[in-house]
Length: 307
Image (cartoon, rainbow, N blue to C red):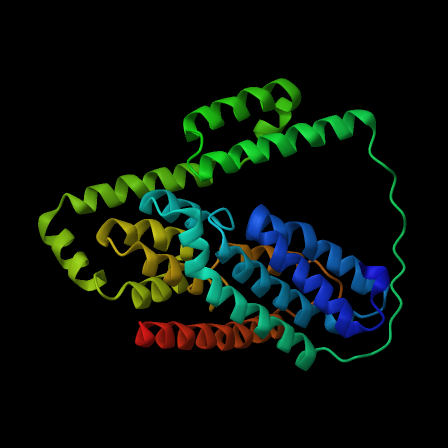
């Protein structure tokens, strides 16, 4: 794909769309972990370091917005999708208008922010996978498809989880040391915290009155402070309007650098580059995030008014 690019603008579009599309199936976190370091290498090799901030920020926005289309695109979607018992088709239809507008906005941003300067990208050929590597890749692909069947409620999540855990233990047990178990425990304690708050009648009643009917506003604002995944877990205990909460927590991933934890991944990678300008990065990041957030909030208001 990169060999087909003839200028910096087309290069930026390819790099941004890679994050946008792949985040729908491998989550926004993994898409950014995969493509942001790749982008840094490509731009440095091509002598295009002055485009690093704009392209990485657009990639980050693309990862956060592309992921909102599917239940497996990000953690809060998976949680709310499971909690609401919404069908896969209804979930995608709910988020499709926001995803399409995001795609248009990203393409427009690439045209506006990136010059059409000629460039030739030379990519070194990589060695092919060994037979063992191909076999392991095939097994992981099948396990991924098995996980998808649990998301779509075709197979029990407990059965799928047990099979995946057993197979990974047999073929690659070292992988089980890599997950962030502290983060998983944090989510467990969040569930316990929410359950305890719901058992206090006065607090439960007050939070229900504040959140109920204001799901979009509260989820967007809460995401700016505690990020959208904890916001989804917290607010879901005090409202039954899951569709609006899905929209709110997805749009809430835009804004501050901590509104979506995936955004910190990109910032961390940029912070390791030579000649980094962290203040400039945060300025561009905040400005573009607020523009996209305003654009999508206007779309929500238009859809709500029409409905």
